[in-house]
Image 1 (cartoon, one colour):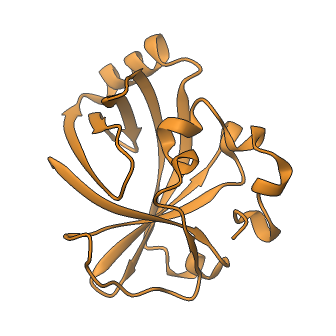
Image 2 (cartoon, helix red, strand yellow):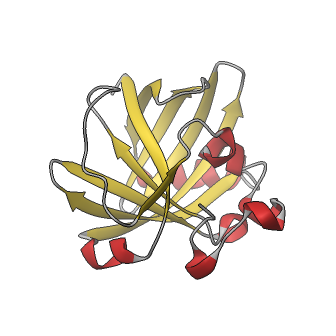
Image 3 (cartoon, helix red, strand yellow):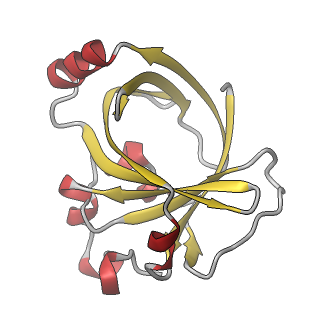
Length: 169
């Protein structure tokens, strides 16, 4: 993929949980972050990837992803990403013509749950389920690259979780 159009939302309820088709544990570590790009390694289940993502604000960004051998990716995560890793479980929820990816964070970001949807166009229409909350696509603090250095657990209490472990909406 050379371009990604992604919208990100908080959740209004736990209603999505009953619709999960499958879940995958992930660890993604950041090798480098500049004003132009973030470079990360991600291990997800029995797969691993090197990912380069443009460091621009918005729902549309350049992204390149390359498969890696899992053993090598785990070694890179251990040697070069210590302290700069995001741990999460990604839950997949099919709805209409789209697949929602719901990231339930662990570690220093535990308590944060964010839903993402990838689209073919910025103005693409998609079904908005009842469990969907406020859109945070343009709020950089919800970007994984920001969460690695400014974890959810360090946010002021009024900016963190409300009831049921869902981020405040």
